[in-house]
Length: 291
Image (cartoon, rainbow, N blue to C red):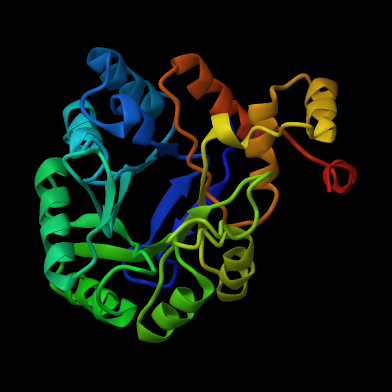
């Protein structure tokens, strides 16, 4: 299979080569993204199958579960193959009531990095995305400076941004080298979610990534991003003999040369379908038809 490759950290001493699509681990947790999965052995089998099928980029976080997806990755894949890239993120934590809370002060970010290192059994994290809710305490500069300090210490190889607004992107790009940006973006989710404290500016950030030649990692739920009332997507999927979910992934892969979707699933069948979506070719006419 001829999979698109995305270089992370191009121009640095240690670039990483990711194959698209990657895999997002968030859905491997229990209900409400809390606790262990209902079928833990099945989750481990799926992760190993993903590697067997050529997936080498896995997205996780210490607040998934919390700690669940990190431990599953370590149990399933450690010791990691030389080409395996594990990307994690910091800036949030889970409350005891399953709430999502900001966790972006310098001392909190350091705790998260140490959690990720321990849970993933790593001495250095290949890629870390820094996210900070716009209403959380402290300045964005203060948090990002702490991330740069931990990168200098060798705890982080490449540093990216998560849930970044345009303002945050512009701050970070002036402070240090940005390896990747991970924001919500899909066929039906292209603009700012004004109800989110993060901003979720996918459509606004993508052109900035293109301008700076920074890889863009769109995250989204295939369940919530499947078009409703978008007959063009449905019609084209039927004409090509693929699912609408696959066409969503294919559409993403055609938006930017350095794009790396990370669809998640708990099904090996759907995992295979997501990977196969990389083989779907869309013509200029197809893309114009979709709009």
